[in-house]
Structure formats: structure tokens, C-alpha cells
Amino acid sequence: MNEDQMMKAAYFTHTGDINQIQVGQLPVPAIGPTDVLVKIQEAAVDRVDAYVRSGAFQTPSNSQQIIGRDAWGTVVKTGTQVHAFHVGDRVWTNSMGYGGRQGITGQFAAIPETRLFPMPISDPSGWLALVHPGATAAIIVTQLLKLKPEQTLLIEGGAGHVGRLLIQCAKIAGLRVMATANPRDFSALTALGAEVIDYAEGWEQQLSQPVDAIVDTSGQVPLQLNLDQLAVGGQIILIAASPKPAATFNLPQFYMAEQRLRGFVISHASLESLTQADEWLLAHADVLQAPAFKRLSLSEAASAHQMVMDPQVKTRLLISLP
Image 1 (tube, rainbow, N blue to C red):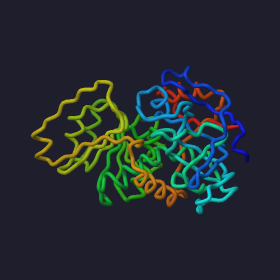
Image 2 (image 1 turned 120 degrees about the vertical axis):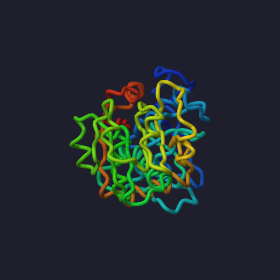
Image 3 (image 1 turned 180 degrees about the horizontal axis):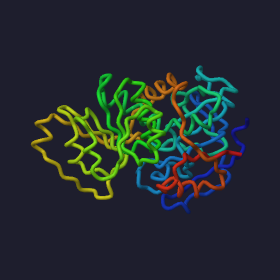
């Protein structure tokens, strides 16, 4: 593979709407001594990709910033100091395309060895569809909550991509899992091991006792209503925001009950934290269920960014590279 060759890629030169995305020819990236050149087979489309492209998530970028952070492919060349991977290996990554790192929605990508992992299963597309919501869920369950087996976790918005992976990760960790959802999703969530609650108004009346933790994936529940459902020492993790930016809560009740509240954005996770989560996912790859996904072509990259922000689009989106 000559690195002076050209490749097809989807990229932007200025942040803005989806029309900023161009599909064209860029040089095949050169690799350093600790990098791996990967022939990309598929790239996932995540909401954070749209936030980076629009400028809503402000992060250092390149003059021609290739979109995307998650992909799988095949190793075609390794740097002189790379030892974990060899030409022909199938690999995946889920932390490119932000923080000054080039994206992966191109025919080739130069990826640091530390941000690559071996493909664990025979269905790489399913694994790629899983890794972004899966890493989010794994960090929350195994690093942030610090719950003990048999403690209770309530997941608000259990039918979403992250919600379903939260259920699976929490069950693996031995937690009692409850999830709010639309009744049409009850059977699927019950099959994953969750006790389901209709998310309609008054849902809290279906709780028989306070819960140890809540993860709000929906951004639709008033903060005080959630705090009222927590046991002493309970905690809330927010991974979505309400359209209304202001929230009020009972401060004396909050501190006397020793409750905790924090937000979480996976793009702020350290490499150590992300690596730990990815290794945990790999250790449980045989039992994790991938979400449904849809394949799109590289020419549909802009449409994919529009689709990923549409709440009516329920499937994960993967772009196939030529």
C-alpha cells in the first residue's frame, strides 16, 4: 500500500449543517511508528459525529476533517513499534474523529495502536453497531455507579440503543434492573432481563421502593421527580438533556439524603477509561446482543447525519466503504 495514493472519504472543512459534508478524494494517511493503517470496511454514524460536524461539540479538528469515530476494518500496514497487530488482522476502533484525531469514514485510516482492538466475533457489523452504546453503558455500570450485586438500577428510556446495552451490562454485573419504556417494547426488554414500567405520566407510582441509582437516557423526566425516587445515598447519571435548560430541586433534601448527580459524555472519557470499558465488552462479547442496524453508502454520508438526529430512526447506521 503506497501512502501517496488517494482514497475516497467523507469530510468537512468548516463546521455547519449537513451540506458541509463533502465526499471526495483525499490522500491515504501516513502512519507513524505506533500507528496502524486500516482498510476501513464500515464506519458507524453516532450522534456525536453530527455534533462535531455542526460545531455543537467543540473539539480540535483537521483542515479536512473526515467524519466518524467508530469503524472496523483490516490491517494493511503497521508502524515499526506496533506489536499487537499484524497485516490481515480484523480490528475496530471507537475513539477517532475528535480531540484532533482524524475520522474514519474513508477507505483507509491511520489509527494509534492504543485505540485499536481485535474483532471478537464473526459478525463485525453487529459488533460495530454495539460498541458505541456498549462502551457508554459499560463505563456507567462498571466505573461510575459502583453498585453492588442485587442493588437496583432504574433506566429511563430502556428501549433506546444505550438503554438496551445498559440493561445487558447491568444484568451481567448482577444488578436488579428496572426500565421505563413504551409498552410496545416491553417484551424485548423483558427478554433482556429488565422489569418494565410504562413511561407514561405517573410511572413513579409503579415503584414499590426507592432505587439505588437512575440513569436517564431520555432527558424527559424532571430532576426533582427523579430525586424523589432515590434511596439514601442514591445517584443519578444524566446522558441526555431536557429541551428546557433550567432545572430546580430541593437542595436540603438532596444533601441530607446524600444523593449524587452527574452528567456523562463518552467523548470526555479518558483513554484509560475507554480502554477498560472496551476490554470489558470484549470479555462479554458472547452474551451481548447487538442492536439492529442499517447499511448506507459513502455517498449517503450527509443523509446519515440527518437520519441519526431523527428520533424516528431506531436502527444504528453503518456506512460501507468501497
